[in-house]
Amino acid sequence: MAVPKRRRSSSRRDQRRLHIFLREPSLVPCAQCGQLKLSHTVCLNCGSYRGREVIDVLAKLDKKERKLKEKEMKKSQEEKKEAAVLQK
Image (cartoon, rainbow, N blue to C red):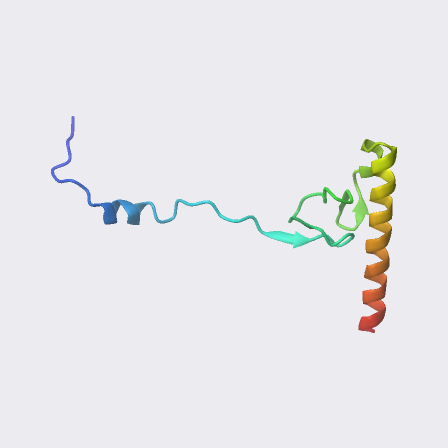
């Protein structure tokens, strides 16, 4: 069996491991609600993907949570409209 002739220094070991690390996921804002999400995935907040609703997020919630979510979504849509008007 092969045995190393010399001990590998910590700097050499660390140079070898230089590219082994966790990367921060690249998050992009959702086009519908503006919440940050992973690119090329369905938005977990509003359930939309590429401009259309794919998942009915409100169906999974109970009555109290559904009301809050609807109010939140309505508020974000109004803010988005106001921002569009101000840009023109």
